[in-house]
Length: 248
Image (tube, rainbow, N blue to C red; front, side, top):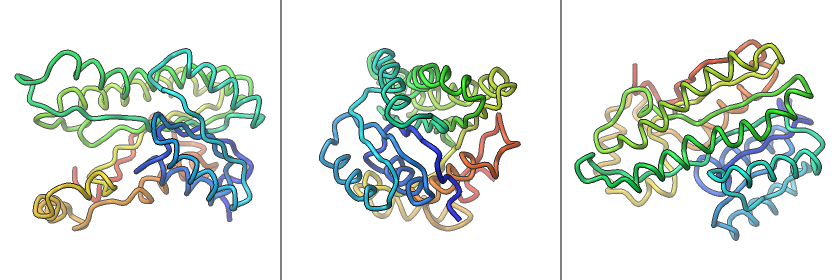
């Protein structure tokens, strides 16, 4: 059973890590997928070619989610080329970690712009199409750090906490038009980025998690599939923790 058969999804930051996992899992569940990348063109084209073989429509767009006008153009292109926008996954994000005393203004502003403003930009861009359809599912990628905070990540935590507030506000604004808005708060997810970290540090993190392992991009992607599908048709304004019990 393909839970997203016939639906069209836009996924930002889809060429690597969690985003790549979401793109692949959505396609396997029958969704037509439009995904964005900022610089990883080769990776994006490779994913595009692989997904094409699954029999769904797929297209990679070079688009900066932190740029308002580019988001407007992207949504218009996708609506024209795919015929609908049923799902939006706001996944694009960066980190620029440092203690507050060492963090400069540019690093704070950049993280807020890329992580939080991008969610406003993309939601605003797809809103008109979803309102006309009277249907849609918006999924925003927050973090356990946005819920509990983390030393050395004040900019990232602020951006991810802001996403939760924005998500709940959209649930209230758009619910009457059958547009749902939810957030996912991943815990420690193992990607190519975490593979570069000190093995002992990673082992320590795994040990502290009740399920005794880091999550995979597929763990996040499966949660996204559920929230995007009709199985979650009565769920909106929620934050789903996918963290192995980290915040329990």
